[in-house]
Picture 1 (tube, rainbow, N blue to C red):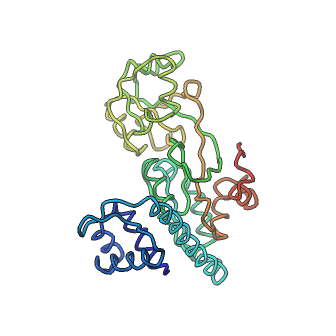
Picture 2: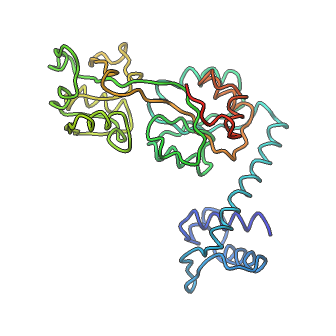
Picture 3: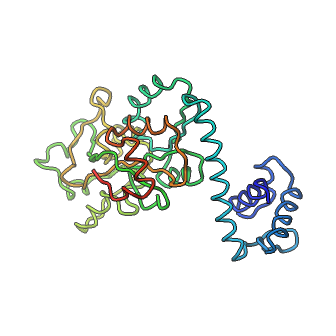
Length: 313
């Protein structure tokens, strides 16, 4: 049994059993992949893939178990390499963070600045996307950590570490009638077109929960994953916006007004998501602590071992 065979099998599964796509991704030939997987089946004495002619159409029941073990073995092999790299060069490497636009634009800049000062030889990459995309990046190993703000039900299989709470606000153009309200209500919001996040009315988000509890259906005219896009369309007069309070900058957003909505929507929690089977290099622990000072390395390690899974702010 060779790790290469397990890698071929894993990639075929990732590519929806498409051998040609797997071969292209691995820079090898389709016959080569087929041959190595057949050799693995012969060695194990069990059929892993169901074939129809030259096509792979399914994975057998024992094949599904083997695939799960193969994934763990490949991850362990990568962890071995990470350990070696960690001890050979403790202050150099790469760190890929999957996060939302709001976190990347408004919460992370001071953390990134400090981290790059401490680790100038670490290549830091920010991958922005929707909650689903962020979760998928970490689960697949394409990102080291996720900074998750909503839809935590998508992060099953990851260890989630609570970082900080934040609130929503409503933004309007200048001189908007909503600014004359004595106190902002959900009923008042529902009288105007609404622009907000893609995920605001999916899953168990605080925004959806608040309107559902009141039996109110707002007129959502536009959704986006980017807070700056929401602000741009609000400033154009397309509607009012509901977004994270941290995303409003009074020094820059001169054409907008903010109305606090913390009394209408439950606070949201920012969490860091990590695969439990991932080896974290020393500088990753330092990044986590820079972002959330209460998450010391000992706390993170204990949580990854399952000793602090109930830890909350």
